Length: 354
Image (cartoon, rainbow, N blue to C red; front, side, top):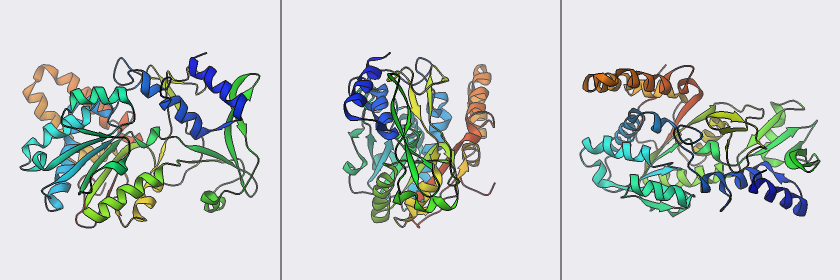
């Protein structure tokens, strides 16, 4: 048993069961025992690989998309270029390198990274030395906002509820035989899920992310007031689905959520419909939700791969393999979705008719 596992067992004994959001928060962000705060998590030496770590092409396409949004917004002379959960800083570094060719963009950009982990901030400082760091999006300057959130929302703690006849029973983390296990709270009405009684059946599990509405509300307020766009890329679904999507990953393989606490990642699928609804509530426009393959293809990532191969013919196989990982149907291409929330001044690129 890990130190975090023992700590949570004692906490539950003293205070009672945790809801799933409390459990995820402890596993990922406990100050001294949490996954993101204590260990390297990205790349071959970590537990998972994100798109920016696969190939520079991903960041280049994102950079060009954001630069086009900036141009279509009138090229404001000063703006916030922000990333939520920037990992090792690889994506932002690639964005800045790719957009150096866009006159005025990098000079106008104030680079801000929203990161909770002190250890990751140290890594990001080496990759993106010009950045400024924040604990929350609320701390960003009041300027036009062009934001990227790549695999950010999937790691936000969520709560799970099981439908009963006419109410909801929250899934909790309790103890059984001294070990962590799923337990159930007493059924009760729950206002945020009132509308889901019409599209679910008894026994269905519905997930809610408590932090999501507040984050999108703040992004929306800023874009509505000052202009800009937010590009969101993650694995998930468009439509109010149901089911237990919680999953753990260790050493690039799926794992059990009650094992290796603090030493493995825990995430869940993102509900893109909830993101769209929260954005529209703040007067934002929402693009269609498209697959990552569609988005990157629309931005001509295939042509970029051909250019790289011509310049580096000895790396043809590696470049082709990276391209397939990003857009392949059995890789990230279909599972990962892309959404742009923006004001009404322009139509974002990358979301053309499939």
